[in-house]
Length: 256
Image 1 (cartoon, one colour):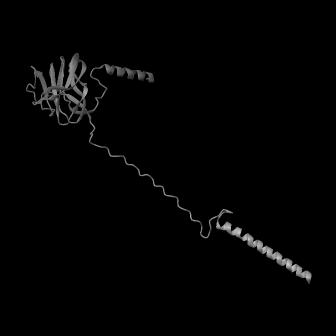
Image 2 (image 1 turned 90 degrees about the vertical axis):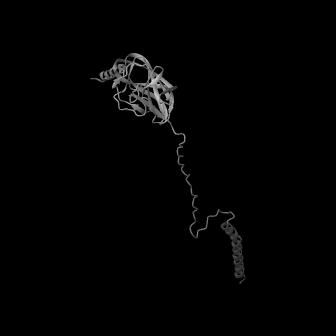
Image 3 (image 1 turned 135 degrees about the vertical axis):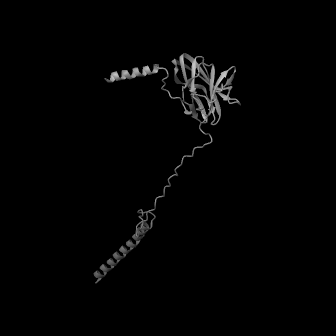
């Protein structure tokens, strides 16, 4: 196969994968925090609203939630993040919302659907929240085989104007939460070590060799210059005295 044919096959494969429902290439932002991935072991049927409560494990900003859904058709699924009331049910106080269009061809084949929230939710480790969602034609899947697969919360159904578990308090939906860890403002990074400036030693004075006098400029006020100038009058006097003695000696010889 030529390089051109291989490139065509790769592009065709990617195009086909993008057309298949349930295949997703983007990873949700943040760290995966709370999740219950089992399912589907039972299809809950059609419902107007349902919710899964959870206990946050990371303090930070929750930006995305995931649900395992199946549908035969296409519709918009709406989610909301809510606080809990005193009975640990969704309180109706909405912290953020999100929506996604879900398309499928088989109610027995589920896929993860991710919802980006319209605003990050500040969650605190140990606090409980609810993922509530509403549809008209989707199946909801969780691990309904019993055994309470997620101990930090449970599945709730909204019926006759209130939330109830219908006696299924050990059931949990398949869900995921993604949280971006918040930086701790009380932690101050250590200061960067500063190198001490290099101390430059003054140059060492060079001593002249022993017995050597420092040079003196000629004719200047140094001792050497003064000694040379003072010798000239004495030398001239001595030469005059020698000349006088020579004259006297010559005259005496002539007189004799």
